[in-house]
Length: 161
Image 1: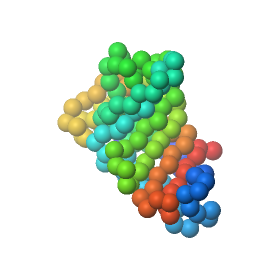
Image 2: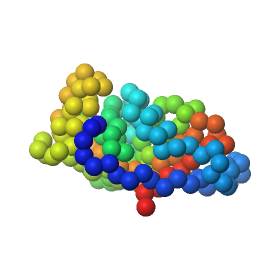
Image 3: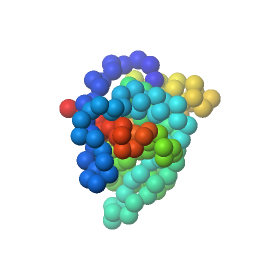
């Protein structure tokens, strides 16, 4: 998505995965662009939510990436949308189990067609899927992200400061 101010790049470190040989130093760590490129080109995103009683739920959906955020929408009566309405904590990941990207954080729901994000998201959907997606939609600016392509050698974690 074009436009808007770009958030500062998150801080990279190594994930804590005891016993798996993840390096302690940053040599060979992935750049943030690895996350951005894969998120932007992916057609499907897996949305992972939990119900009010803690039951997990995962579902694939379409979405768009821009300004270091993933935006996705769907019917308000779907299980995952009801879960997010009650508990906005979410994990989003890609289908690929080799070039892995996992995002975690809290979503914000955009419902106002006049919100500046509304036009940008609709334009991005049109470019990517040949259809416009009006509000409402969810936006995740991840608090933490994980990625790797040669686990454990390049396993990288990013956090917002």
